[in-house]
Image 1 (tube, rainbow, N blue to C red):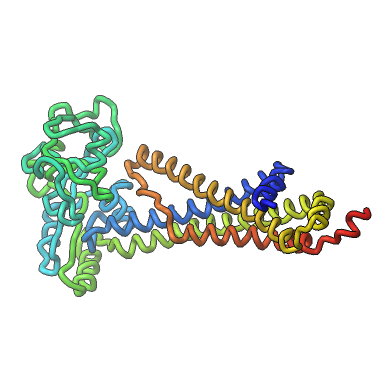
Image 2 (cartoon, rainbow, N blue to C red):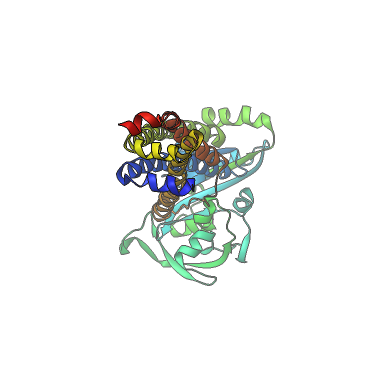
Length: 392
């Protein structure tokens, strides 16, 4: 007796029940896999984008908004800060590095960031082509920005006022940017940026010669030692018109907040897997009752009770295997769709989706749920009363 072939035939004898059981488990496995990847992606992206930044200085407002705008470029800045006041902090002896940022324009949805060469060092960004920008109106493109915009070395374009795509009247026609460099991919937010010097931002917005009226959007700072963490944030928050936000603290808080929603979705997905186990139990139990006569015939032809027990367990294993594969495929399709949406809306791409160690446990647990659900039907098959069934 080829047990696998018999189990396969039995499984599809009642296709509706089998399909319902498989689809429920596919949905559960797919959701758990999706949540695992999203949690890993979110935490990984936020953590890796911290780079070498210990503190962000900007206009007073929401610390999280300041971090998201200055570090991840996915929110509006809290405002601008006076250049002279910011530079007094930038020269503080407890700082190892301080990099100013200035926003204002964008091109086809990609933000144009004014900064200094120190910005590249904070995120270990290296050139793939060309040179770093030096003069006004020269730009270096992040890897994704260059790819999406189709711009190469020597390319020219005109930015638009603001951080979103604007109509023709907001285009700075008198100021053409020139691409002088393209960065290697880093997997960080810098890949999405068009980077120029701060003088370019001031020139376009009429502040190149206004001295004290010039402003920064934020300053990214790196400390020399732990004493800076205890001293500088309080000094800035209490004695200046600016605020200091700590990326590590704000991002940990944000991840914890997002984690509540992720854990809720994961709990719901596990509930679906448990319900799918109940569906497997009902499906196998119903099929077993319909095949009582067939099982009795198999016993009379020499099949051992253990073989009948194993037959039911193989059917459950088939359901679990098909559901696990289908669930993992479903999660990849959903992640692919989300990656396209993120790239289109926020210019962020989710990273590669390799098989996670937790997913191996997920498949094992799904298999365990199906096999546990099959124990009762399998035990009934083992205890098949040949004489009684055939006499009926």
